[in-house]
Image (cartoon, rainbow over all chains, first blue to last red; front, side):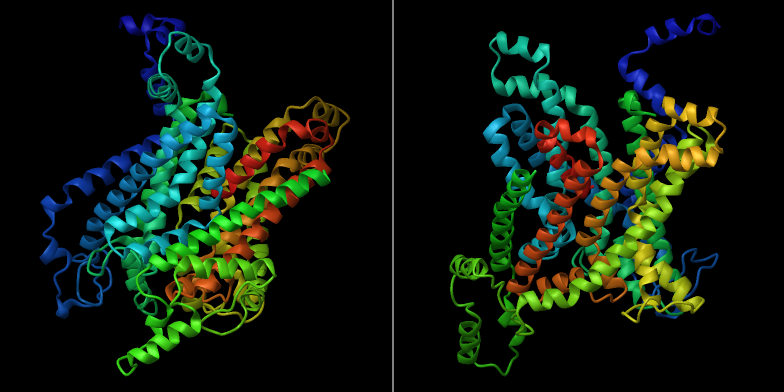
Length: 295
Length: 324
């Protein structure tokens, strides 16, 4: 009851910065739906092994039930080996989320320090290092992925590396730009006066204040990585064969596109819903973290 | 301005050198080379060695790279291993199709995102605005190749209205263009929206309304015109992006374009073709970027004054947009 009698100003004062961001995010319906879907997807990815038996339910052949359309028993139908597509699509969540998240982590490991160095030092260092990034971003990301997979060989780890490398320029750009905006602020100047080392200034004082654009980039980056991963698997360069990665399912379904179109419908829907949720969440986060941008 | 153009073209050179070096080294490290694709169990080791010597694959990658670069400065982009044709000719055979697709996709993209963005800006903050924005994000979220498959199923297989692939005139470009175009709507739609929001509240619009002009004239003529500058800029960078990233769509629709050619060339380890095509493609994309920047200056007199100071920043901005 007491809370209701507070004025708006008091209510704002009570909120912590994090609470304020959460409050703004909660008001954005799209972002909340996205957040719920992303959490469901992550939980599915983590827990799927406890519910599904990989060898029997996901990869076990059942020739008697091959190429059946969607029914009550097989909601998404079955493929040419009689495997239940619903189980395969659900299990595929694990691959997509795993690959998406790890590829972005990979790109952060390289892109974050790289961008921070470029942004902090500026000048000639920046000019030279950014030319290297220009080279990387001049190669189309799909092609970069194909070349990297060709060098390393097709496997899940190499797929993560391939997609991660293609994401590095984006992470670098966003880190560099936001480091540049806070580099000349007074508190950085004062920590320089206090004699802190450059490393400690960058890691303790600059990067924490650049987190919000990077967080948004990470969310959108995972979405991007999932699409790239399924694209590479679609070309047959991703996850090895029996694994039900969504792009691989699409690639398998493409051969049966005449007559058995449901085989391509459901894996694609799964990619679309996941990517849509991540994009909505990312956009919502951007608005919540920086209300000045919201118009 | 001439100096700036010259500088931009000079800046392209290290990028092209870097890209080609990267490709040469990576293709050398890749498992198997072009000769491994040719040989079968009947090939003797001598024949294999002879083939390697024929294509120069017996030499280390770095030497081949310098040979290649030497040729490039004389205007020779190398010869494709597979077809024996010069890379420049192979590229020119396909670039027409890629250009057609890029133009058609950009038209689709503009036709969707411009009205949607204007509508969204007019109804800012309402449910209509949110729904329009949702559709734009939806277009961004659908994986291109899957949308392509779905369009093939619906329009080619179920309804039989349009061909499912290949290049058979105007009808076969519709589905690929829809596929690529919808993927690019989100960014252009947002630019249109925010750019329109900037102008919709301007004083001269109040004047236009006050003198009794139709609301549609006010929005479509008086507000849209000044808002067009950033829209044009983003539309052109989307056009450049269509050039760069349509390989999967080209594969799905068997569209004989550059993207598909390069992907196939990587699979066959046809290093000169990959390298030469990428060099040509990067050049085209950055020339489009340069034209965008120059147009920007030509169209907007306000930019001219602050040109010298802002040119560097603007280039960075276009680069990030292309990436996105």
